[in-house]
Length: 181
Image 1 (tube, rainbow, N blue to C red):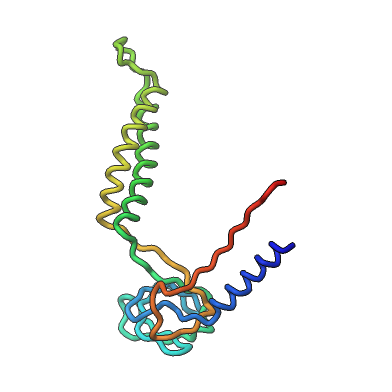
Image 2 (cartoon, rainbow, N blue to C red):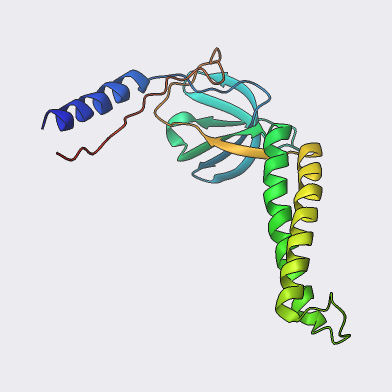
């Protein structure tokens, strides 16, 4: 019972601490927004209390959106080369393995009778492994060169302020453990 009360207290305290924090936005940030009559990716032009000014990436005229009208808001954050390399390696390894398995199964049985002859299953596994490693290597290189962008959600109960600092948020976590007598 004490653990439950302590957990609830931590949740309510963390909610009170994070309520009213500032949006981590600044002019020039790319945002993905959903509001009545407005949905898409925009560039932040200006921040005012309760108002967000933004424009289409190719547009000229800024649009005004009240913060209370926004139903969803995410900020675009560039991936680091390391993160891009790891994502590229995972994608390349998966694609290489699948392509290698298919090619190995389509190639058929080797009936030459030599010591290195393989049936369909063995050829699929060997080609899958080789192309998996090659795909991971190529994917890591491509991912490091062009890491891409990810979207981080922005809490909508935050106050909009032009002096907000990126990544200046307080994070509170709760850990639970089960103990047997």
